[in-house]
Length: 373
Ligand code: PMP
Image (cartoon, rainbow, N blue to C red):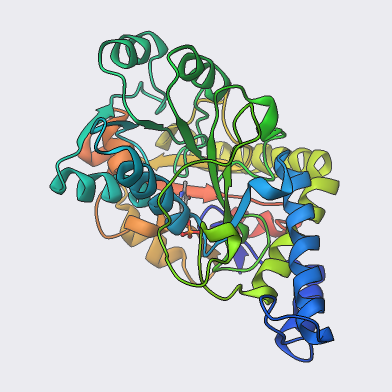
């Protein structure tokens, strides 16, 4: 089967699996225990993984907090900042095209009295910087949370410029970088004004159920102030209690090391696959398809394609025995995509749209199956 749903999740790299296995079997110690070798080995393994992730993301090791993934990370930042600073001010800014883990958290916060501004986006899902500056100047929020790379159409928000504006007005800034890690070369600490970042291992060939949030230290080296989502045994410097999932963390570390080492090669490969896919689809379907993407500024490997007059649910179901694709985000597949509606597509256009997403494991010859459709 041709797997083209890599924005939903990716296959674990064999080296990631090999790195994880000992921590599921013989190395089962709890890293919070002390002195005996099982505990110390687990602790060392977690710290190695922390180094590997910090190298990929370009941050300090003590700015990393391991989580269960991006849903938790996004909840942690939004609820944690809202709780910590909510007595000062209740305004938070986000966009209309965020992942549900941001949007639904914001809706929850509204029920607790928070005032959320959902920014409009252009036809490719990006915010307007001038409008953004007017809003943060007129009504400064306690947090801005803006998606970096869109999971349905791949568009990239101007994170550097948003960070600079946030810095100018002294506003905390979080980005959900779940789709970006491993596909865009960046260093967190080179982004002025960016305070928090969320990502998840299973989007770059690591295991499911593990991710990180990066909490930038301030210019004096002081830790970020945020109410923890989980209270308990004070693991992760008290930011996130709970026994660490050592096998998953080791897997994330290995996936980060591989992603870091091969990032240029992987990006080139994914771009080559994407262009073959565009050629095959265009030659086969001609004017019966339409791309929703902005090819000038998007994540490599994500194609959002309208098959004119064809219902996407039916098509995805019919293709399922040979090709794995989706109608949009796996996290909200029951409803028509809010992202596509917000970028201005009609409900019919949305119902015609399929997302193809490639990764470094997609093989060029595997695309041949598309010619047989
Ligand atoms: N944000 C974005 C942009 C995503 O694509 C996803 C996963 N689809 C998430 C958050 C949630 O990540 P996780 O599966 O790790 O909870």
